[in-house]
Length: 212
Image (cartoon, rainbow, N blue to C red; front, side, top):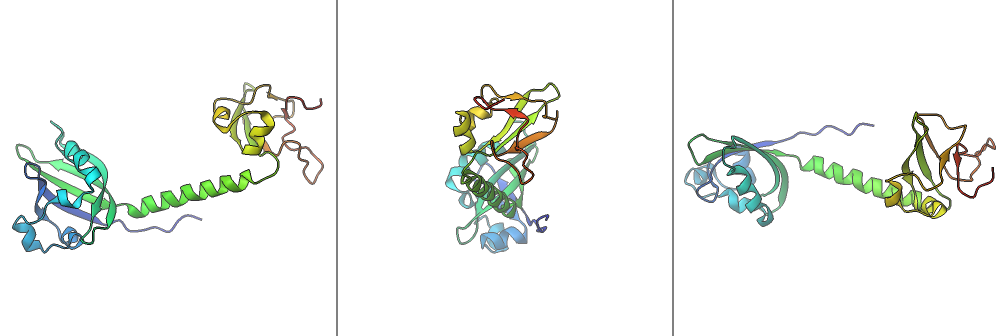
């Protein structure tokens, strides 16, 4: 099922690169985010430099101060009025013959949260697969009858005497495509395991040391 859509909020500011990113103008969204009244912003009381994580400050300054760069693109964490970081994508537009730069921020924190959730689910799934007593593998046979190793769990690595890192470089030594392998189609299964129909799964692969 596709994930539910979500809204992306935009904020706009104009900063002075020559004065520690002093905010010279900002929309109501950014003023509310920063917790500073628009009148205070007009008086130059807000500095974007203070709203950046210390680890991001030098990188942001380098990006928007690139010589001859009209537009810049970057990601960063902005700190709200409580100091809570918000992950944003930023487009910077430098004014010609000026030290001013217009910056538009898009709140993409939900996107990062979903990506981290997917990574965590992938790790959990791999851990579950590794709990299988036998080996679980996924191979693909190319039209040239070459075998591409797509996945080996830890049990399968022990069976073939290889590692997951080495398997990404090529199939285990001695592995060859048999007559039942179909070019272009992936072969997967638990080596030596028979399905309910009595057919040996992954039978299109010859495993070193296995019977003919």
